[in-house]
Length: 173
Ligand SMILES: CC(C)(COP(=O)(O)OP(=O)(O)OC[C@H]1O[C@@H](n2cnc3c(N)ncnc32)[C@H](O)[C@@H]1OP(=O)(O)O)[C@@H](O)C(=O)NCCC(=O)NCCS
Image 1: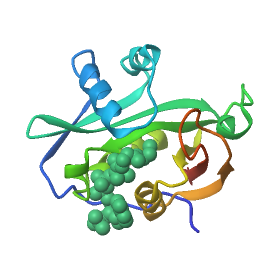
Image 2: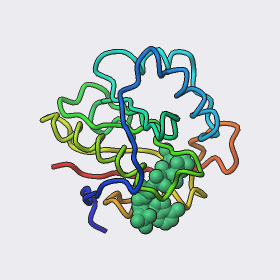
Image 3: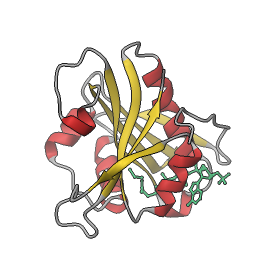
């Protein structure tokens, strides 16, 4: 499978995408609690609003319906936890859209913004993320957009069934 980003069109809904800031971060916390089985720490939300973070929310008629958050880390960190590589990768921590607003192109708009941000970083080589092995919707979404499965990561999640994840990547250059 070709694992470089596959283009995007406009959303099928009038959506405004804005950065996460001190005003919107509590709405992101509420969204994440509905969207993901993982509970994120207070530190996670504190970091979201710090400079250099890539974190956005999608507003549909003023309602917060989607969110994305990524961090930059050393290249290969997602697999080996090796620190200090000069090149980097963007790690996608969260990307989600509330169920009634799915299949309107909101997810791909958020993803496209992250890809664009990563492409602007000359050190960034790829975008990576973990997806739960039974999350067929997300796997189809990412494969549709040029992500390829790198490998199975057994027992990636704690206290979640099944605990296994796939590591996915999209090469940037
Ligand atoms: C994955 C997710 C973010 C996709 O968001 P979305 O806004 O529905 O995606 P889009 O509307 O932008 O989809 C773009 C394309 O991706 C593909 N796609 C998206 N969801 C799909 C699905 N469930 N099945 C098959 N293809 C899908 C389609 O090709 C779609 O285009 P089309 O609707 O014109 O056919 C959404 O399903 C979601 O929030 N899931 C729950 C949270 C989650 O699991 N996040 C990922 C792990 S971090």
